[in-house]
Amino acid sequence: MQWESVLASIVFSLIGIIVLGVCFWIFEKITPENLWKEIIEKQNVALAIVSGAFMIAMGIIIASAVH
Image (cartoon, rainbow, N blue to C red; front, side, top):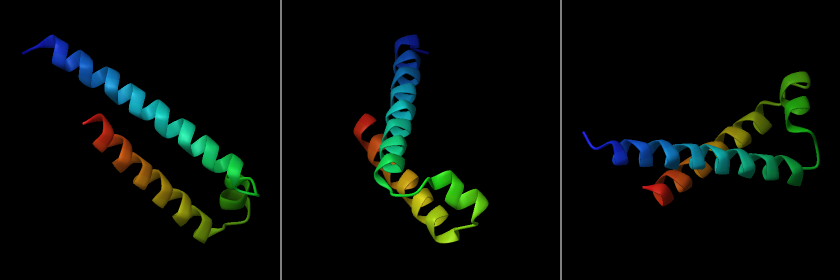
């Protein structure tokens, strides 16, 4: 097993997670309402679906960019 490949995979995974977190933070700042308040307190299912779709889409984009 090549440890350099394993280390590179771990580093790229961490970078991908950080980029995904930053993208979600920007998405939350762009939207007019507080996402977590809307989803948890007001039970806004549509906003939860849009947020989940955004996270999946960004995850796919970041994974293909890292790969």
